[in-house]
Length: 309
Image (cartoon, rainbow, N blue to C red):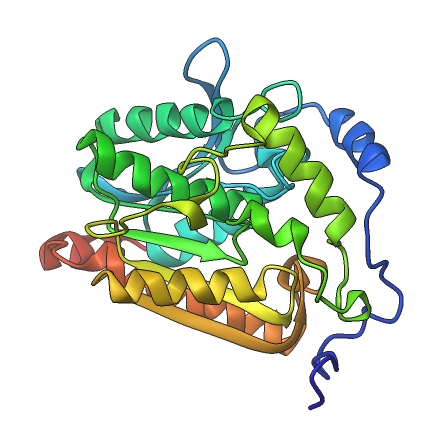
């Protein structure tokens, strides 16, 4: 496979744009009105933040949980995008899965989205049917960036320690937007133009000197942060920054499983869910979650759950 060839399982790159029209995408996403999810609940946890939560039907006592954070460059999208994934996690692993509805830039720049995610994490950990010692966090793109920042914030505040961060092609480094050596023909769905606009919107008044938690790639000491699973395609704008973050995590002693998908573009697993390469990519995430969330889980609880199914 040549450097910029697309994976043979992926059929859409020839039709997809290199850049998405953010103005139109933001208007369209704003038209989606949140409704209770099929098989789950829509719960407002305070005046600004809500979650879409899915619970296993045969739960026994306090269950492990996943907090998921949706994609959208910090500027668009909503938690409804995560319904299918959360349902899969709950159905496959028998754990609680919740997706947070956080406020978007530029109306709400940093640190609003991060604090909204932290509020959702605190709420989830306090639920009576959640095992607060077995919570994973994760997300795609900007959601992955927020998950990485949330893991760092949790470490700083010394409250909740996630057992795993699932970072799917995370948006971690504002400095990527200034690079001039990236071939735009290799990109789909997220370009340097998109990246510059989104980072400026999210950073707001902090654009000149971004705080460490705004752009996790700038964070100085990763020691003690939660273990990570990270995935990214070779034709993704975030490829280099993600590999660099994975390497820094490992150097800091943080276990980090890295999945690099040859010829995959940004968001490939969401745009082409049935492609074999996308199925394998999501299965890798599911396996990492199962391993992290089942560790230390009493065997008798698992046997009782299986017996009831």
